[in-house]
Image (cartoon, rainbow over all chains, first blue to last red; front, side, top):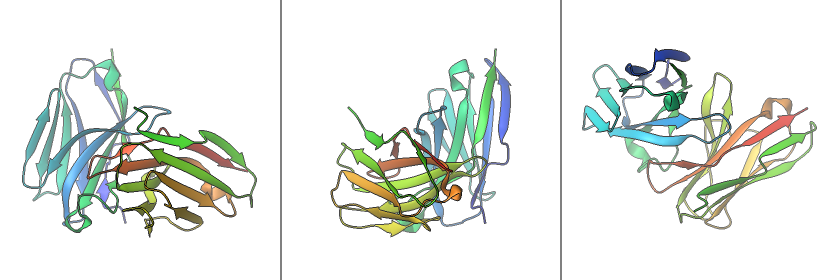
Length: 116
Length: 110
């Protein structure tokens, strides 16, 4: 039973355009959401996060949107750059977990490919 | 500024052999985790620790044991390796939600 779903295994976007990565969740107890970026042969690195009390969080070229009623979040990258080519993981944590102490639940990831 | 260090980076085991993966962090984080990543499966939590001397099971704990004798170290043990344990293993540590991951250990069980 997958609680965090990333239904697009891969996404190809032209350089300079907007990349939109989607994530759906089923557990209504999730209250904190994060995006991690992973390059081959490296560990994931934290990118951006959002609390359930917000519907948008922005950091430079990266914006995360949260729609609680639809249990859906998305990551927008504008403009997309070649260095953005990586696997992006959506992750979530539940209210009772005390700041993520008992582990994040990850989606399967979306491989973003930025084409020149 | 090492962050999270995993050793070894690569290992090939024969079925039935045992080994220990070491994770060390120098950020004084309370929480530490072991995840495995398999193709098409994302990251799945094996075991975690919320402090020195404590451990707990995650989503896929079977076949693994862990120990956290020192705050900075989190060990993952495989007592009798199986081909199903072929995977990339990631250790992470955190204070809260923002996890810092190591670069991974690629384990192959033949």
